[in-house]
Image (tube, rainbow over all chains, first blue to last red; front, side, top):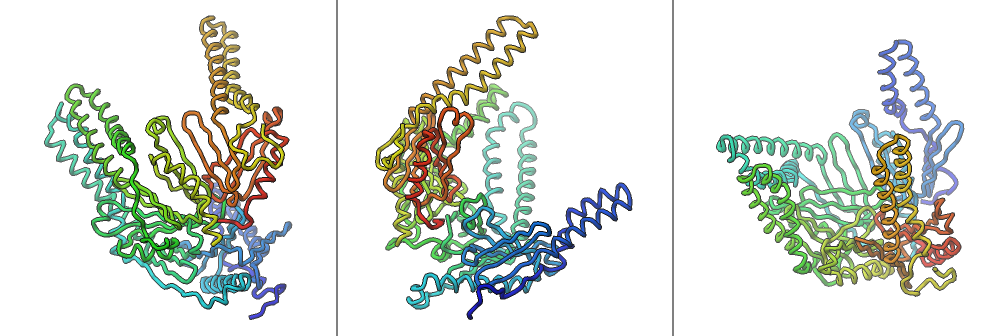
Length: 469
Length: 163
């Protein structure tokens, strides 16, 4: 369809009239103060606030042009925002509970190249906002096609299709098995030997142990229920679908989110699991994207309970495929000196409170020092789970004993890299290594210094070659 | 002293301008000494025992000396090199840090000059990439050459947004 670049396709148009009412939150606060003082003041606060909102709304218009979105606002000083479709990274639909009740929608448009990159169109009729979003995305694709030119000649590229959704049952399961309750349980198990001597020193040990166990169980149960209910509310109707170059994510009950993430903009992917989830064959995966380069905020979405069996299917859509190697490569372990440090560090973490107990309830309290021996299996497990791998397209770092975390970084997205050496690390030739990407810095502690220095020098430069290809 | 010509690339690791030691010493010792002076004056005015005044004076002097030593150590460790494709930084007194920032990731380079830096004829180059965590700040560059260094680095930077 040919467009005249200078004439709007749609508009200039105002947003939905109810915008005036929806933005009255501030006026409501003023009204409460007014109510306290006098009815006359109340009336004038509402009238003034409403009038200002109305004027703001009346003079704010948007236009959909052939190549750009134009938003004009302001009474005395006119401000015109021009958003070329090709600079748009993301158009998201955001609906607060109130907006849902009124059938309205807020469109959030993120662009590249500026820190003030977010443009909001609030509020629009829901159906209208959906068609605007679809039209702009289609137009962006057309424009991209015409500028890259040759690409269309390759013929239509295959459109991958996949969908990942979460049932209510699985959401509850994810909430119940999230790391919080697991960590609480682990802390409680450690606390028993640490605090036991205190009880043995005075008081009825049996009642204390049983009572303590009962209280802990109740607390765990309530915490788990709260987290599970939170998951259910936040991630209800969760659906990720892959459509050509974009990932579309829809979820939420009270706050409804519709996100679109360009697959090529994925900055890093975190895979997190814990012993219970591992036993159930589930994991949580977060995909981090960068809407605005250089800005502090990032855009991400989390699939809270993905069956392990579908991991590689999802990864294939969000990280570039390594050439001739399995999707998640074998991880190289850290040197033995790192295991020693992992064990010592964790033993100390347990020992410090144990020493306090030992001193406070000397001599029976000394028994609590035994608890610090738990640091040995904890540290060894952490060491076994830690490692790194680098292929020609991705870098992987992994760490964590209980809550295990694997970070995948596309090499083409790496901005810079760093190493850091504390005096203790220097003695044993270890270094901590981080990769800087937009919106995060995945890191591996206690890596072999020579390897870390080599990766520091090569990975950020490899990105240039990968990108050029 | 960094060379202001086009010779910054592949010249190996270089130190910061020696004047930065003065800058850092004044920066960290200044507040300590100032506090010590104010406290001493206060103590003298209040007619407090002379030994307490002496302790304050000695403590202030020790802090100033420590700041000077620290600044020298930090300067001795600070090295930067503009390679053919990336900037490399090495610094840190207790914790050693090293970072590599490829030119094609540079989005913005700022030249910042604080009041003390202006007095000493120094400037700080702040390089930005799309990652907020990138460590790419070169303090203590000779002010006269800072703009040249900035221009030379920008010439090597890529043109796309590189996210």
